[in-house]
Length: 98
Image 1: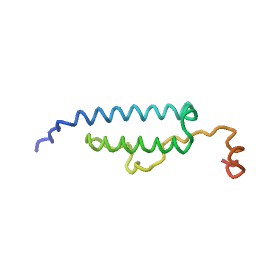
Image 2 (image 1 turned 180 degrees about the vertical axis):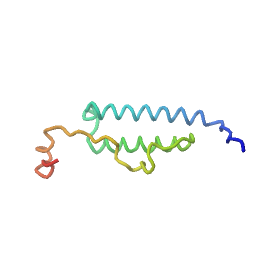
Image 3 (image 1 turned 90 degrees about the vertical axis):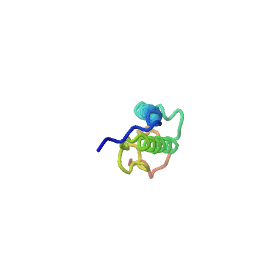
Image 4 (image 1 turned 135 degrees about the vertical axis):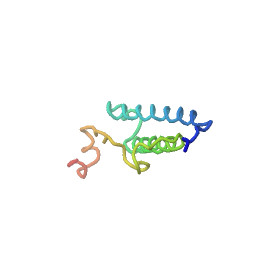
């Protein structure tokens, strides 16, 4: 059997996928450096990261490539956000043990 032919829109899908992967790298950099705190609350940042992963996986599927992780559509990002030292005091005793 012959290999499936490339569709005429596959190159466009791969370019959108590349753009989303750059956006994903940007979010990882924000997480690593802690700069996300200037732009987002923790919940907003996690929601944005989940959305980036979900859309990245959709474009990977359109482009015929595997997703980042099977079932990662609703998964929490791989890296955990480091909370500033003053958060336990701001959030109350319940979070002091974290």
